[in-house]
Amino acid sequence: MNISIEKKKSDCDALPKGWQREEVVRKTGLSAGKVDVYYYRGFRSDASLVPPIRQTASIFKQPVTVYKTQESKVKTDLKQGTQEKPKQLFWEKRLEGLTACDANGVIGTTSLPKYIKPLGPYTSDATTIQSLATALHVSSQPITGQTGSKQTIMENPGVFLNPEQPLIAAVTITKDDLRRQEERVERARLRLQEALATA
Amino acid sequence: MNISIEKKKSDCDALPKGWQREEVVRKTGLSAGKVDVYYYRGFRSDASLVPPIRQTASIFKQPVTVYKTQESKVKTDLKQGTQEKPKQLFWEKRLEGLTACDANGVIGTTSLPKYIKPLGPYTSDATTIQSLATALHVSSQPITGQTGSKQTIMENPGVFLNPEQPLIAAVTITKDDLRRQEERVERARLRLQEALATA
DNA sequence: CGGAGTGTCGAA
DNA sequence: TTCGACACTCCG
Image (cartoon, rainbow over all chains, first blue to last red):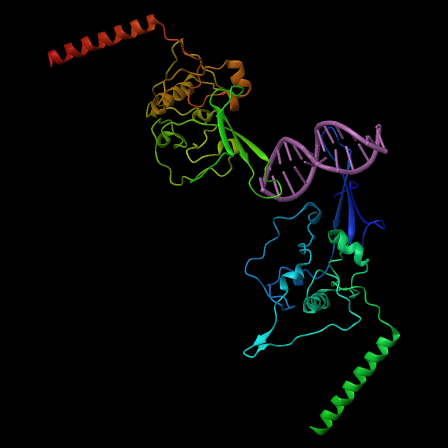
């Protein structure tokens, strides 16, 4: 039985969202009894769906040949076995410029709806869409966008960027948005009904 | 061309005889520029004649089936390709109790001359003789015995024991000793001469 | 060379 | 004296 009052791990209201505080008591030496405090992010999402993924635009995981635990990790990314492979900051930037194309050239250009505001250092909406699509596919939590202020996040993204959320400003969904979406679904169902009837 | 000012290897007066100090600068990573210091013995004798040998009383090398580079080595035993397989401290102790025997029992008991003083943790003169015989057979340098003080050596044999020398106190050879040995040789030659004459 | 853990020292 | 901050050691 492992009685351990020496390790205390806790979320902490004073910390940015997703960060945790751990207190470790020194066990030996002159400074035994001293408490060292470590801060690190602890996230828990589906570990089978997080990077590294192949560096293509696909949001679906594709296995890579060698998949090891990251070796060159920093202190705050370590701690406890359940720790996750860290995401690279603004990793989506590596996907920039990738587009689907065929013999006739680029296909499938996209654009963002007005209410989605890009937040990262990205030059094209396509990258923002990739970030959003990845979050929708990977995350087990609701997608809200970044809830911190744009200034705070961009000044110190290592701390204030929430890696679980896509690089868009927080999106507010209004009752009007819900109503419009319901109408869209309704129309689609009607068209499907007609199509099945004439088949 | 390999310009390396990062490796500095030197004997050091503060170190026991035969030890060397090497400074290696870390070239990459977070700790680039940091200096690691390694201490190791650098000796060079005939590598084909050093342990491990079969664990018999024979002082002659007999090949063993598997002969790998030692894996569980300490840092100080590593370094540079010419480094030698480390001797186990007081390895001669493993030979203790081995004696030649025939159907009539043990043969060939031995004893040490007075001027040879055992130095190790050995219980029988036979082991000391094995140590001495191995040194005489293996070493490319003169056999002097241990030149450090008995107390220093036994308190920290890992550092102060000279593995190139047998576990006997330093032996002083006097002019008298040489004269007696010359007489012995002389007598032996005379007897050989007589034996050949009467054959 | 990295990482966990301890030592050390100045400021509060 | 306690509390950071970070230098350092030891080991894999």
